[in-house]
Length: 522
Ligand SMILES: O=C(O)CCC(=O)C(=O)O
Ligand SMILES: [Fe+2]
Image 1 (tube, helix red, strand yellow):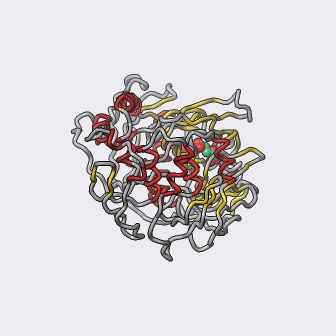
Image 2: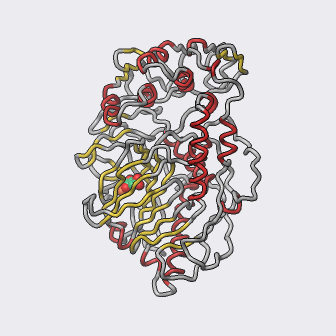
């Protein structure tokens, strides 16, 4: 965005593209390890779920080199690649075991025999109409809201808000969780809720008014009042309307424990439709390619494996709800920013267009880039170099076309389905980094984006590409200073492993890694 490591290490081998002898095509086939792991021979047994977390952790295994792909037509080589669970399995998982009718009851009938406990996730038993379901762990009050929404689809938004307001949490805040105080949504005064368990007021607003347009949502966000000021030591719950910041409440990019009821409530024809769509997506994802878009610009299609994507989302989710996590920036260059943002390594301030050690509006220090993420970036750069080497037949030096880069800063954007980002240049990194044209490495996860790029700030003249979940885009060297932006997000285009495994909210997660300052080697 700028007009502009530390952490938890885990072994993960490098990923190299398969060889191709052709040098004439602009696209090039590489075979991800996933093609083996999720190949057609894999059984359709359901995957074992991780712990009850809604963003399950995934055990990363060593990547493997794969044998060279015979150089037929570069475009025609399709490598089978399967999602974590086949659409069929997923569809099976979401099939209701019992008639849905008894579930379509008022949220008022949801009984909670045990108060929320800050450490455990048990909600005790709950009675849903005549069904007595066993105790289910649910971590957040959001689940209650979700249930209210899900079991009462025809209800008006107003009555949903009322339903939510009537849900009482019996246990008061404990000292370790941050309080949001009372929250006023419209004319309703909602009871004090522990931030830890509640989604931010922003998310509450989204959830109780899902049909609102993005613009009116932003207006609504601005109108949400939070009575308690932010506490600098805990995750911020305050309104944070300083400068152009619209909100700094906690923002959870994942849906909390939404599985069960949310899916049970879907009609069969919708499930079948989704299954069809996902089959098509699986097929298209089987085509993993590297594309040379222009000098210094490489697109690595489906570079991030499904389990990589789940892991990245989980990492971003955790960082995003912590100190220095997601917030809603207001404006940039006078244009409204329709996204949530979080910075890693250094804070990039949309108001001043500068990087700094802390975020001006709440003094939060950005978390460092976790090592797992750095590793993915390095793998992507290595794969690009290998690709350029193969493609250039020795005539070009990959490291000159695309200078190597060691990321120490990252901007994480979450776009809701109405999100966009105007054409801009990333030009706020240190001058030495810009002079060396160290690349920007961009990860796309979730819903597909239409990405624009070009030499001038003109949408009509810009080239357009689709960035899908798992794609990595790199622009450095001669392309480092291109104008680029996101014109639209395609709703419901995210693959199943993102929506059902990682529980990412509808929308798109994007990470752009950079190296702030050039450091000469040796
Ligand atoms: O979301 C994207 O693909 C682009 C993001 C971007 O350009 C930025 O954060 O600077
Ligand atoms: Fe950018």
